[in-house]
Length: 126
Image (cartoon, rainbow, N blue to C red):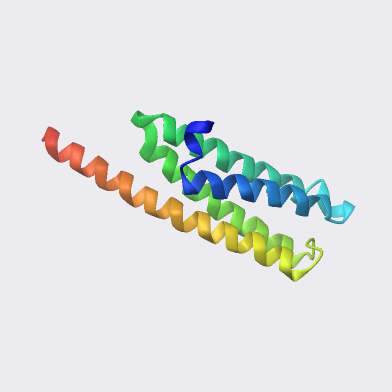
């Protein structure tokens, strides 16, 4: 994983995993094992998808698209957790929401870049 440390997207995603672990630990028991578990799984899947997209050139565009969708899912889950008052306080919600938005921006830029690269390679073949 050392090779990923230079990617801001990877660094931010791993920070989000750490932050989410701490926050879910403080969720009320009713939400900890349902919504909290989903939040944790989604953040881990985001890291997994970043790793796969970085290491698999042939399927990068599809994986970056999947990454973008996972981040959108995470944003929805964070919003739902706020609605059911799973967060201990507003600042917890605000921190993870801002981190998710930041990840979404970075993933959107990467998606735009991979689509442009795919178009260039297709135009070379034609």
